[in-house]
Image (cartoon, rainbow, N blue to C red; front, side, top):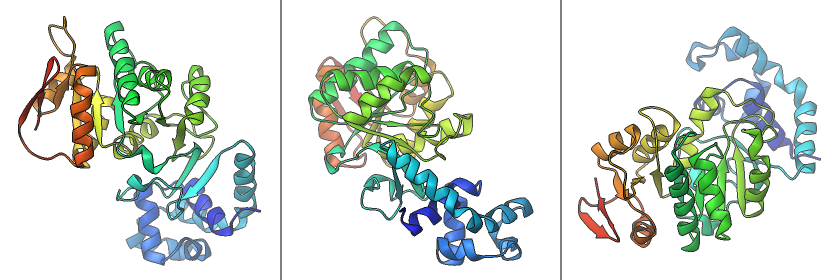
Length: 315
């Protein structure tokens, strides 16, 4: 039988149409999830709660649907999916400090204390061939240094970074922008299975949720939060990779970009990040210095460091 508290949390997280901020606002107002599920629709219409009438009615009806949520948790467990509340010990420590931390996570595999500090490697879904190779090379190089690689399982740079880490026998973590039972893109299902064997696949969305743009963008804050630094390999002037880098900066993480010989101009997104003080790393020769920086914790100092064939420009 599922833990009644877990069932209540899952019901509110999956069935109310709330984002994390709205979830935590209700918890603060009522003092706990169980109290929210006991509230009437009139209670939930209080102006301070900022809920629409339809949403208030939906939340008030969740108590009658707890059996369905319990059955879903049991079904997920049978597929090897753990459903975690924010207070649970297996919930990733680095996410706990976020104001918009997910109240409930679905996870296949495990996030270990040894996964800190990790490195996030992200980029466009349509990289150049050299960009794809660079993402894989960096994933492999960090894994060889014992650093866990975090990314978003997307086509292009993300998938290449995961593959590189796995090729080196390292650990890697994928954060989905869809439900845990709806791996996206579908051609990465096998990759997701391999990642789960040597790390974790995580989702904050309801289990069968589709990969909508809002979910894909929201997961970027989790990618950056799970890592001590983020490397953007290639990126356009807008999109998920830049969002991840901006979230990393906001969270006090290191921000890097990839560079390589023979490229006259960086991609537009990389150029924007370099203009904001991101550090350019060339490849394997720079990994040791990045690992040293990650071990220091949040970004510190404003010095220029020479390593390998590239110049690391601190913000």
